[in-house]
Length: 318
Image (tube, rainbow, N blue to C red; front, side, top):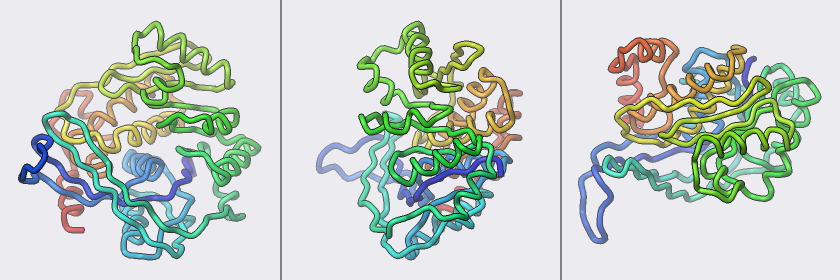
């Protein structure tokens, strides 16, 4: 197994509009979709679509939506043997996006689930991997990172939001790619000058003794540093429909590049392209490109969608 992730998946009810409605205004919905969600879960869906072997550790609830989450990951080619079905109830996340602002709002109801403890089979799966992918911190994630580190498995972390608690896991990581929101909160800045990003990436990498440290900046691109230097890659321009899951897809593609032992500039370009291509479609899962789609996109065939129309139709029928 090349990439193993730890997550507790959810379901996104996606609603796309032409623009944000004003108070008390009625408006026609342009598109709806029900797709699997979760940061690492969606990253793994990208891993599967890109042709790299992946598995998930975690749990889902024993209701309709929990079973849907598990089946959806299988649909994207992910091993779900260690995704346990436990008592609980899963509420939907309502995700509202619009064409005019190209933004989104997320309304979540939370999930009632039984507690999850790592078991021997989970440890064995982690030790078998090249990369352990995480996106949150807690006792389970800390334990998984410890097991991976001792086994020589690369621990890769998606730092979406910053809090002081994140410091507890940073020292256990090998690779960290944070969002622009983490960047702004951690460095107390809203500036995105390249010289400032370079200095901050290098300082962050040195402080936590990371193999790779980097940050994503949405449509402005992404940057990272390793022992060969600092690199920046602009994001390709596409017609954006929905940015939900773009960061998760980016991290999945980044992990694929690491698993293939690519050089950092190539990984940045690849991950940025995969994330941008996803944004052409509603939701975090339906629009994830395959490797063939990425290669055709780079060669100028930007309209090719492969089996994405079939995926979109599948999610409309959930």
